[in-house]
Length: 269
Image 1 (cartoon, helix red, strand yellow):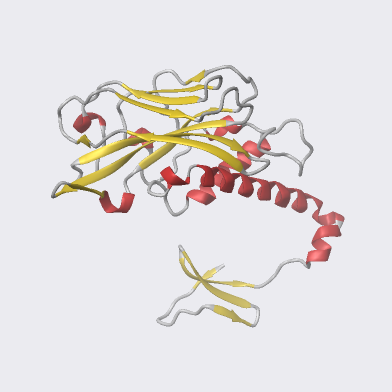
Image 2 (cartoon, one colour):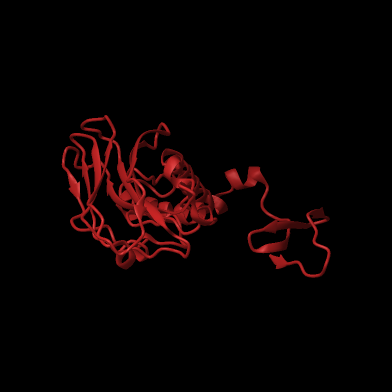
């Protein structure tokens, strides 16, 4: 891969060279690769086929998860979120200790490894919200909750310039990775003034309406920054500073048991 220089930038293919634009600028690369029939049958590519199969599952699982939480994800992700999530999902798959190489999958892997994943790499929740909170999943009742005790915004929230208010947001989701279906419940606080006055406690409850689920359950928590103008609230800088993190995961292996992270969800990706 080479970077294009000069005033005129090219797109397309000339001979064996493909010119294209990416997030890293205008690049060029040489065409190449192995014929499809050889790739599918040649023993030399067995390991490559296995890797490709598992990478495909990671991509499919990542897409299913993002689709499930799309309503809260729209304003809280960075441009490289998908690639980061697929990378993390590959770690989940590689933790599968029961399936043969090439057959490893997310359900037999360790989905709990996703806990702490930040959807906006430019605004991590642990570096944005310093107010303590409790996250819990009650599988028996289908309730996924976030409880935030009273806190002082200007000393416990790292807000961008121009912030006048913010919302705390949450979502609980059951994901069926095999059938690519999901059940979503979401909640948010009202607009909270960004000042030095202690806020009221915030309770965000997400009721899936599904009891004793055997599917993986996920709880996300985040913050949206707002600016009030003439009585109306507007997203600040199109959500570039909003944070959203996967704070709790219940894989369903120990079905019926509640999961509680204790005092707060400040885990890294």
